[in-house]
Length: 169
Image (cartoon, rainbow, N blue to C red):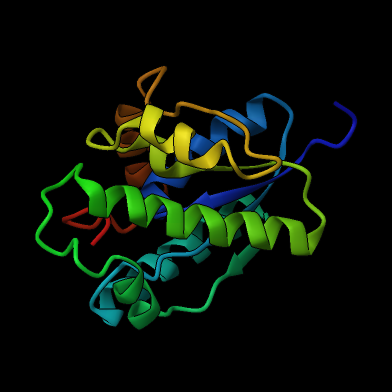
């Protein structure tokens, strides 16, 4: 592969740290894309954004920030608000964030993109891969592998990254 540029959908800095580390080890030039309209309240969204900015600064890589549109996200998952973790709301949320990432990748001329969502211990990577398979340029990386979550904790401490009390919404 000649073009080794990849847009990395970033749910949070703690998940981006080991995901980006792995991608860089594999020769990818990463650009972080922080897109998380599902995060609420806005103060929490901003704490996570601040931490993503810190990671981008440490690594000296670009960070692109998507607009925060919690109302649009709520409309997208309407009718699934009571679903448990791992239910249909999660699949819709994955689709929402992956579509925004795919659109941004296309807009910016990236031929490859992936997501940090697969690092989360409660996120089903197969479901994420199935949803993302419809988007051109999606690259399957299961960041849970190779002790991804443990590495997330280590790198968060090393870099002084904010670790939130909950994933997603």
